[in-house]
Length: 185
Image 1 (tube, rainbow, N blue to C red):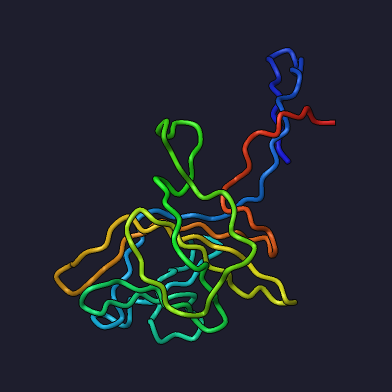
Image 2 (cartoon, rainbow, N blue to C red):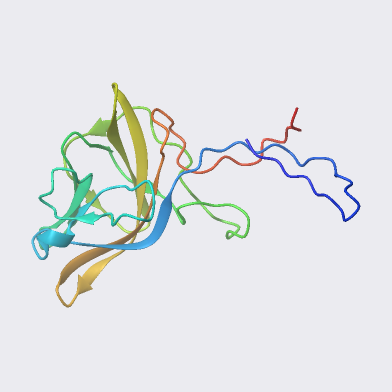
């Protein structure tokens, strides 16, 4: 939980702001993934806990969470070993809505509690896809990929997407919580 107070030059402290509770989670915008058939070495993706590591892996890497495939007509997300993907995409206009977002902003706030598959899933732009990743001890971590573009580069089929990853095992929240409206104790 977080709240803020201000101190003036004479050392007087203000009343505190409302308490905001959130679980920090990394996210990234504009990730590029190639189709496995065109560039296998850049077709795998693994959610990261910090921006110090590259999330792009080989599509053959056993640590990948998902890989992109293209069959000549459709793009597919194939879950990695032990990873599952929610059955179907969710229409969104942004990875996260909040202050400064468009008035009609639509995001995916929470991962579904059930309905996950280990099978590949066709992907479309402007849809968000939820993955659940084994976290040990029988728990899951949840991540979301929001596909912004599907198309072609000079060296193959690509997907451009935004992503967020919940670091707290078992927490279905995919976006930071909004203000709770509670004063701190």
